[in-house]
Length: 78
Image 1 (cartoon, rainbow, N blue to C red):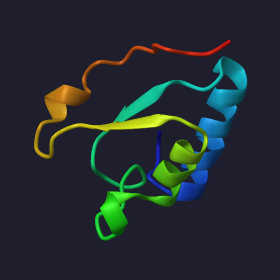
Image 2 (cartoon, rainbow, N blue to C red; image 1 turned 45 degrees about the horizontal axis):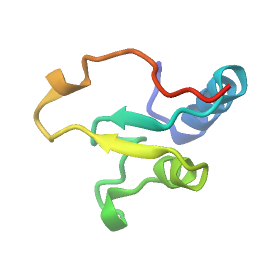
Image 3 (tube, one colour; image 1 turned 180 degrees about the vertical axis):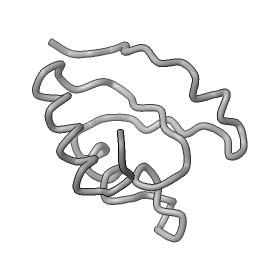
Image 4 (cartoon, rainbow, N blue to C red; image 1 turned 180 degrees about the horizontal axis):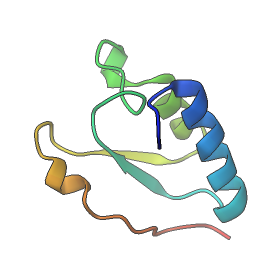
């Protein structure tokens, strides 16, 4: 994504979910817009939305960006 703005992130994920369906899980780092550093359990509005859609959230360990290098899609429901 070209920006971390939450509204933009929602729009991008809506298009992706419309085209490919919902994944079983999404792996993210711990930054905005995927996590809310000062929010309850670190949940941002975006991550709460994913949970409500039934998508599991997988977070990488802070300070370990190499854990985010796997860029493939698995578990997509038709």
